Image 1 (cartoon, one colour):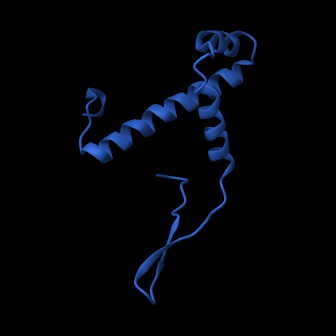
Image 2 (cartoon, one colour):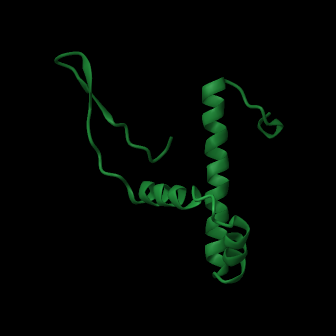
Length: 92
């Protein structure tokens, strides 16, 4: 995928792979924080949606929709790579 870093380094002298530690990007930190917030099952998601739609500027709403669309797209691509085919007709 685009933007993801390859966390392994091939050691040509030994012919093995070594894992290298890379810093976490800003986008990865935000995704982890969003996942942590949304994993709270006491959170009323409908109230959060209402707040995003009414109390936040339209730009914030559109950016949230963009994140959700990117999530759906990347989940479909991951499923395609795992299974080898699409299940949704819109990809044919």
